[in-house]
Structures are given as C-alpha cells and as structure tokens.
Image 1 (cartoon, each protein chain N blue to C red):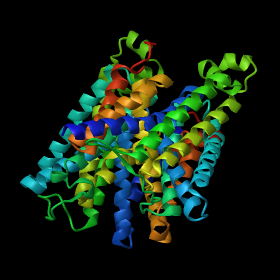
Image 2: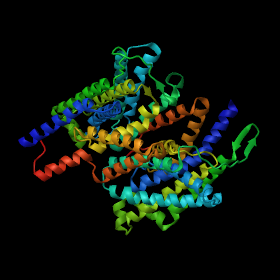
Image 3: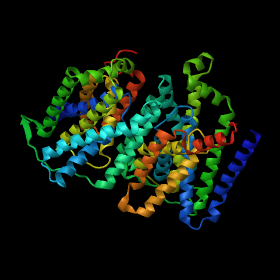
Image 4: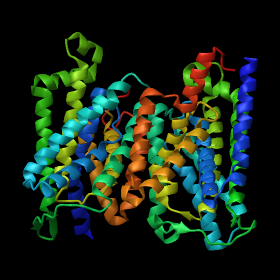
Amino acid sequence: MLEELLMAFINGILLGGVLALLAFGLNLIFGVVKIIHMAYGQFVMLGFYFIYYFHTAWHMPLLVAMGAGIVVMGLLGMLVQLLIINPLLNAPRLNQLLALASLIIVLENLAQVIWGADYRGIPISMPIIQFGDIFIRSSYLLAFLGAIATLGILYLFLHKTYFGLAIRSVAQDVEIAKGMGINPKVIYYITLAAGGALTGVVAAFFIPIYTVHPHFGASFTLMAFVIVVFGGMGNLMGGFISAFIIGVVTSITAVLTSTEVADILALVMFILMMMVRPQGILGAKA
Amino acid sequence: MKRNSTTSKIVTAGVLLIIALAPLLATSEYMVHIGTLILLWAFVSTAWAYMARFGLVSLGHGVFLGIGAYIPVMLFNYYGVSPWLGMLAGVGAAVLVASILGYACFRFGLIGDYFALVTLAMAEVVSLAIVACREVTGGSLGCTLKASVGWASFQFDDKRYFYYIIFAFLLLALYIWRLIDKSRMRLALTAIEESELAASSMGVSIIRFKMGITLLSAGLTAMGGVLYAQYVTYINPGTISGVGVSLSTCFKAILGGMFNIFGPLAGSAIMVSLEEYFRISFDTGFLGVSEIIFGVVLLVMIIFLPKGIVGSVSEWLNKRFGVARS
C-alpha cells in the first residue's frame, strides 16, 4: 500500500509537470488577452489528432510529425484570435466565454466527423524504470522533463526577449503599453500562437501516454482551469506550484478511491477556491 | 404603443394556438415526438433564462436537470414510489441543492463569468457523482425507467399526453415570466445587475432576490428533468446532467434571445428541428455535422447578434415602424 501511494505521489508530480505546461498556456492567454480560453483542452485533443494524422497518413517520422503538429496548433491559435477573439475584444466577458464554449462544440464534432469516435493512438512502447519496489514509466518521466524544459524556455522568452517584455507589459497595462509604441493586437496574436503551440507540445508529450478520442480534451480543460484558479488567474508562478499540488492530490485520490472521486475533489477545490480566495494561493488581496 | 401591444397579443395568441392544435394536424407520431421535445427544451431554457436575463448566467443547470431526472426514476425503480411523490422529491431536492449552492455563490459575491465558471464546475461534479455511484445509477451507461403505463405511474402510450402536459408546463413558465415582469423582483434584480453597491445602498436585499429567482429557476428546471425522464424513459449522466446539457440549454435560449419571453421557445424550436433534420438527412455517417453547423451559427450569433433571433427581430421591427417597446 505504501509503495502504491508513493508511486501515485511520483506519478502525480510527473503528470503535474505536463499539467503545469497546459495551465501555463491558459494562464498566459488569460493574463495578456484577458480571455478565458474555454476550448483549451480541445486544442490539445486537436494537436494529438494532427500528430497522429501526420504520422500515420502522411508517414512523417514521429518527431517531424510532432513539430508539424506544434506549428499547426500555433497557426490555429492565431486563427481563433482572428475569427473569434478580435471581434469580441470589447464585448462583455460573458459573451467571450460563451463564444469559446461554442468553439468546444465545433472542435469536438469536427474531430468526430474527420477522425471518427474511435480511440486512436500511436503505439510506442517505452521502458519502465525500476527503483527497488517503485516503478516509474519513462514516458511520464520524459513528459515531465520535457515540460520543465519547455517552461524554462518560455521563462527565458518572457524575460530575455523584446517580445517577452512586450507581452508582459501588455499583461500589466494595455494603455501604457500602447503609449510605449506596442501594438496590443500583434501581442495578442503572438500570445495565442504561443498558447496554441503549447497545446501542440502537450499533445506531443501525451502521445506515448494516452490514446485520443473526440471528447479527450474536456477533462484537460477542466484540469487546467482548476490549476489556474488555484494558483491565481494570471499568476504564472502560482499556476506552476498548484499544478503539482493538484497533480499529486488527484493521483493519490484516484489510487485510494476512483478517478471520478479524484475529479470531483479537484472540482470542489476549484469551487471553494473561487468563492473563498479567488486571487489564488499566491495572489495578493485585490 | 397601444397598437403595438395589441399586435403582440395577437401574435402571442396565434403562436400558442398553433402549438395547441399542432398534434391534431400532425401526420405522424414522429412529428408529435419532435414537438414534445421542442416544448420540453423550451420549458427548461425558459426557466434558465429567468436567471440569465438578469445577468445570472448559470452554466450549471444540468445539476437540477440531473437531480430532477434521477431521483424519481431511482425511487420508482428501486422502491416503487409513485412518480407523483418522486416528482416532489426530485424538485424538492433540486431546490434544496440550489439554495445551498446559490447561497454560497451569492454570499461570496460571485458574479458574471466567475459565477458561470463555478456553476459549470458544479454541473460536472453532479454528473461525475452520478457516474461514481454506478451500483445504483448504472453509471455512464445510464438507466431505464421501469415500464408501467397509466396515470398512477405517469407514463403514457399515446405521445399526445406528454405533449399537452409539457405544453401546460411551458405555459406556466411563460406566465411566471410575465408575473416576474410585473413584480418588484424585476426592478430589484435589474438594479442589482446594474450595480450591486447602489442597489444594496437603496435597501434592496441582494441575496434574497437572487435566491428567489434561483430557486424558482432551479425548481422548474428540475421539473423539466422529471418530465424528460418520464417521457424518454431512459436517462444517462451525459445527456441529462453535466456540461453538455448545461451548455445546450443556455445556447438554445441565447440562439432565440434570452431577454425576450419567446426567445427560448424559438431557440429550442430551431435547434431541435435542425438537429433532427441533420440526423435524418445525413444519417450516422455524418454524425456531428449538425453540431458543427450549430456551433458555427452560435459563434456568429454571439459575435454579431448578441440579443438573439427574437430579440434582434423585434428590435428591428420596433426601429422600422418607430414604435417604442411597451
């Protein structure tokens, strides 16, 4: 039992790394464009399908297919900005939310029409690493390391480049940023492209772990929300820490009870957090 | 002004008369079935719009639909409790849950998109809970209501019974809408939506009025769940609770126009008939095409016609003929 719990803990940490990446994208979009991207998990689902399709139908080598999938997802992110977010920039927040929620319907059914309702995946067998009584799947470990490396690159991008500076300044104050000669629309496109590409990266890490189906994304949207709200919306560091908390809590609960109870627990944490401490674990009181 | 209100009364009476006579003119059982579904979803999304038109956009009405559908069916299947009592239990439980969740939301001042997100999460919690109790509820495979035809068990062979029963409930919902329009509640809720601070400084009790409209909306929505279960006789957490049905309920109202009394009815009529049309003309090979088109239409509506079809048309008519809204 103790080994099982320890393994659940380690898996929670490893999965938490990938979830941190997912939450980072959602958080970045919320912080910069001030929009809640309701269809973010569905983007991961699409990314998964694109990589699958490039690999199986066009016979690209897996790594090339992954690269192509990431690029396509980045472009799709910009398309969402162009067609949905731009016309709604000054609309009430609720309309933005509902528009992106209807995007969920479009994307899930599009996937169903194109690829069907079956479970699809690329069979890759990766070794299992053993430490004493503890078994760790190397696919999880690889995803974790990859996610941390990607987060590091994103951190450098945000803090060491001109565009990163511009993105952070738009997140802080659009009006002042405009005064400094930054065109917020260009920054929005870059942010959505980065957010889209991130879903492609997450999908690439998920390839050896999961199989995909049209409703694959829904649980990840909710999970990313839970993490983002838990860490404080727009707070990147808070999101990073809470991804591990949520990852470990759900993973251990799933071992002790069932996955449904684990999801319920995560959602209840989300609801309570929204009510009692909407600024998140690290946020300062507004 | 006078002429406008007479015209709208005539139009209203005409629409209701057509609905009332439709089953007599229908050529097949199937058409009555579609009509029943339209009225059922119109009833539910009208109840949803009670709250939404005052800015309380709930994306979690699946909570009440699920409770209303599951409790009477469970009671009847396992204990043989009459659906008439089960109905009371289901609606009562939904109102109880609504009062707890609603109080928590309003006490902590959740409004706008935060309220929408929290209610969405609540819908998912109820749906997951139904799946988790799979020994009792049948999990995600759903469960079937034990067949037993007659008034005592509230199941009928002739589809027209349900058509008229649900029509009566829709009329009730529309009548309550009118009552709300004339009441102090509407003024209070409009004031609260404009500015909670200003409203409360005028002595309007924010929590009391929000709770009032929420309990009303939740109770009627749960009744919709009861009617759904009794009519369809098969329930499943994916179709009657959870995020999917919560979103589609609100999308029906938005499509028609949630600020207009007939908006949800129009939206449900359009959506249910479109769904059926695509289901028949494309068969299963293109399963999902209707939803894609529906999603795109919704997107276009939200971006370009945020008042919905009925809302935009009546606004255009008013502008065109220069009559102020009554």
